[in-house]
Length: 164
Image (cartoon, rainbow, N blue to C red; front, side, top):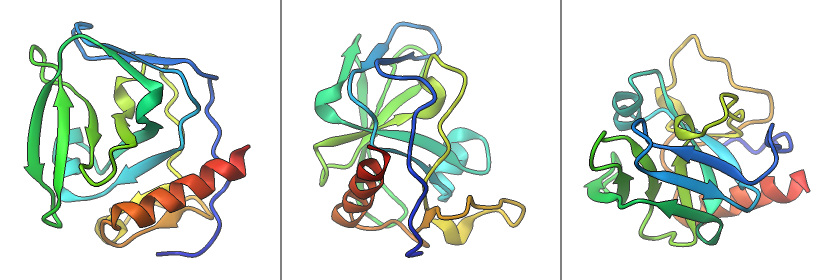
């Protein structure tokens, strides 16, 4: 992990934030300030996003309200840990992920936000798999692999406190 302090995290739009699946059958609202935006460069996230990496917005569970019924897909991650992926049963869009070891936070898929501007990631996981052409923002926190949930939560909390 890089020890350089990340830049303060700020949303471009104040809360509440809203988003939906592609069909609009699932809607959600985030009422509290997100902790941080994270980019994941693992093989699974690249395949999910159809791009070089995927981005998520990390929010507190108590700050997320979902309208509609999501389906759950439980899967093993690249590191063998379990991840819960919640998605629209009609269009298949993943709305958020949750680590069973970190029930207090959810990772919303940034592309499902109604706003078009996605916050800049301050944390990168699986940085060892980053595309050679991608340049990290100075001060971004980088993990070569997936850190344990406690370590990642502590980093996210520290970045959120810097922004206050």
